[in-house]
Image 1 (cartoon, one colour):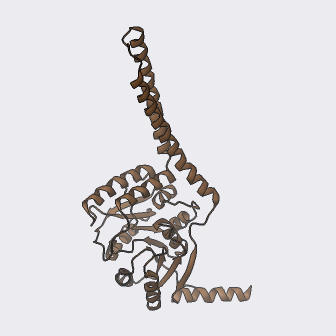
Image 2 (cartoon, helix red, strand yellow):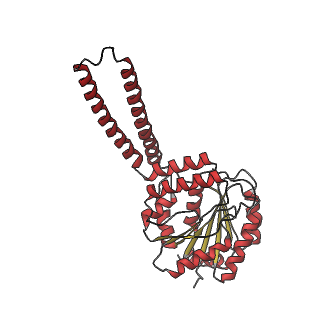
Image 3 (cartoon, helix red, strand yellow):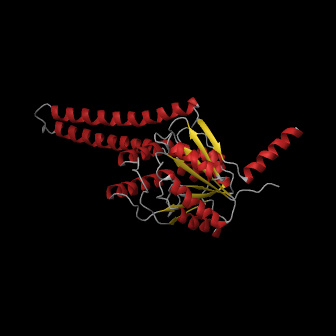
Length: 331
């Protein structure tokens, strides 16, 4: 009987050649101390630096490491889902590649999951991130917007440092959307979520690619991918505008019949035309965003394309391969 993996760690990789050796050293030490069979899956999201070369070297040295290289950059969510689809552990971990998600904090998340067997996912969140002040403020605002859009349970915050059960990882992978928002997908799959506070470390090397503008764009993409509230907000704005226009019409008629308007209302006409034109363009813009996403979904394009796959031989992998060959011969 084959030994089953207890833990799978999935790490999307982008521009992290300088972090990877230290990350894998710390992570392997933490997992080795637990004494449970594990695997580490790294997904290179078409990094422009030499991250893949580093992964090739690390894979040759570490028997429990596998690496996937995508043909084109698709973003953190797609790369993470690529890893989730390959995870075989009973517990699946996702974390970032820049060592700001400290490997030693993984023990806290695993302990929280073990302490409450009914939980499906535990998020590791941070009271204070090791970022610039404006980025911390922007992150808090965006996280609150995402929480409302994703429908997170009260008191639960999401992050990309998470521990989930294999069943939830499989359920998340089964969503075939081309524009995945992983936190929203997890919320659609289960309400048994929890977040606990852990420590956030400074970036080990390099610079983050998530500028405030990119974070805002990502938040907007996530909201329009999973939530209808921009359309509803536009509808509410339209109703409010109609109410305001009705009041304005009544006021104008009263002034007209009481002879309070002695000059042609050129200013009023200009204001009204400009105002309603802006409302119409806003509504068209929001609907256009949804139309683009509908077109992308119906195209059925793959979320990612694998260019290379490297798997180090391990006892579990070797046993699986021998079993596959035995079944193939018998068949």
